Image 1 (cartoon, rainbow, N blue to C red):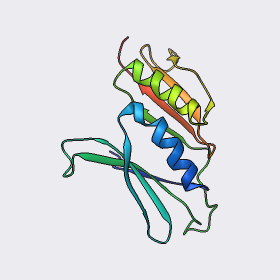
Image 2 (image 1 turned 90 degrees about the vertical axis):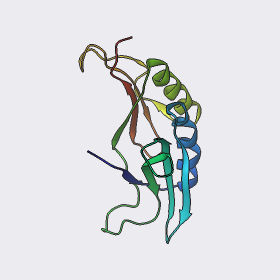
Image 3 (image 1 turned 120 degrees about the vertical axis):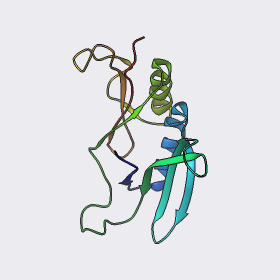
Length: 137
């Protein structure tokens, strides 16, 4: 089970502006912003099991890779689970309005499974992000 993920970005301000809008329909808010030799953003959703009531599971940082690779993470696919198909629709429209590029409008993807309802957007860093609902209509 994954606890959290961190992605490197070229422009932390652009990531903050985009993800603050794109993730809002899924219940996410900016939970952490700081600088510890690099700029750091953490986005969280409400989770009563966490000590502070929020689970920050996706993080963005800028600056060079400590492993010698490129400074930004691109070409990744990251999917958030949505509770309803309406949340998938809202995610898609929010992400597009925030500057994302269409990579698959909201709809059923029966090739994945009969109830797979997803929407895909390319974020400003070139990553394929998605919201998906696995429940019947």
